[in-house]
Picture 1 (cartoon, one colour):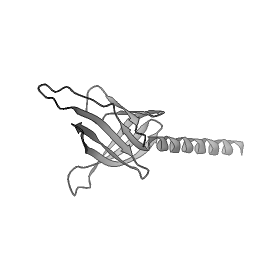
Picture 2 (cartoon, one colour):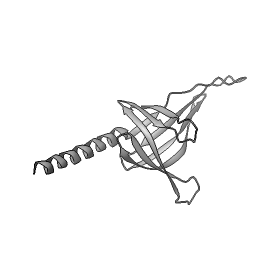
Picture 3 (cartoon, helix red, strand yellow):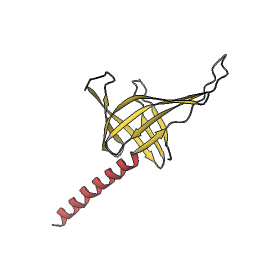
Picture 4 (cartoon, one colour):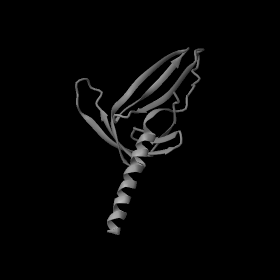
Length: 138
């Protein structure tokens, strides 16, 4: 009986920590703003990477660009997500082809500390790269 109770407590604790991690991931995140100096140009350009994890299990990744005060948002990836464990999330990335239902599965590593998210980049590289994001306060 004691073993059964111990196993039940372990399962409930594991489930609860997974749920709290998912809740921590939910929200809008943005990388540090980059302000490149363009040769021969006087306009101001700013860009940042964004990612948003929604309560319904969907996500959007993209970029924001601001040129001379005009802000544009470009959504690059959309799809669904599910936590694998406390530092891995499985993304089902939707195809960018209109009408296609194909999805590409990717499992990426992430670290969540307070309002800072560090996640594997979705690019192929010999050396694994990560991107840091800060929670966007609304």
